[in-house]
Image: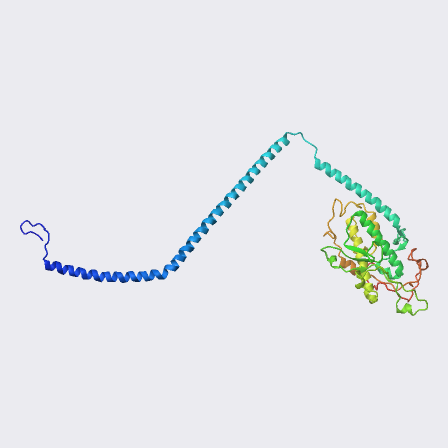
Length: 416
């Protein structure tokens, strides 16, 4: 309160009753707030008890995650350190290698000029290839003489008259074009085709050429049994002809020849023919048309092989001349590129058949099956001398009605 004389504020004074009143109010408020405090503490304690177990589990999980993180951090850091060490070592090695190469290069620059070794080796390889080509050419000439591949008959163009082509023979036997196959007995066809297969096999062996179609033998030995032909490995259109087809005819007489007065003796099948070969494909008891079609397909495969062989030796055979197998082989043997390219020696050829060989097997097969056929046929029992085969085509061939299993050919286009 303020002094009325000096007007200074002085300490306040209370009476005992006021002090008691104030103390009582203070105690009442203290008791009220204490009860509220106790209630809130009890409520908080109960709430804390409800989350105590979850809190401990979360803390444990947090601790485990922290330990895993620390372990992963340590492992990653160790891995990074190892990678850095390996890269550092590799970098050191590369630097040493580069330094060594630089020293070698500098030393090489100080050397006097040397002859090109690669050029010398290339020249030696070229000389070796030419020697191999000459050796192959000599072997092929001897092969032609051994098999006696010659052209008989024919005449040159004289006085404005057109020349006539003769017939090609091998071993003294005429190999007809597909259109004239039925003009010869089955034994003749089998013999001349076997000679041609042997000649072609030796020729490709000498030249190192891989043919599209492979020839196998019924007795599983080279040259023993009956020849069969089928496609080898390849990715072209001809590679789908994987089935084996016969390269021989059967002299089994038909019903007409059986009823004739002089039947020909039945031929016995080879005893060594295994069941794994294409006997199951064209069995003996199959219809004659099926056997003839299979033989025609095999003959087309043989002609396709000859055309591909000619292509490898620089001789291009058109489709119209693909049926003259021996004539085409003679052109191969007389080629100026004979023996220079091969599948086994340098310069290497592409596997059969390359894109540069445009002749398609389907075209050869179609031309073979549509070759014109002639009505004249020879009795199977007649010999080559009796029929006049092996001399010229100008000699008369007697037409007979007795039949045998040959290729049934027809049409107006083909090799004929």
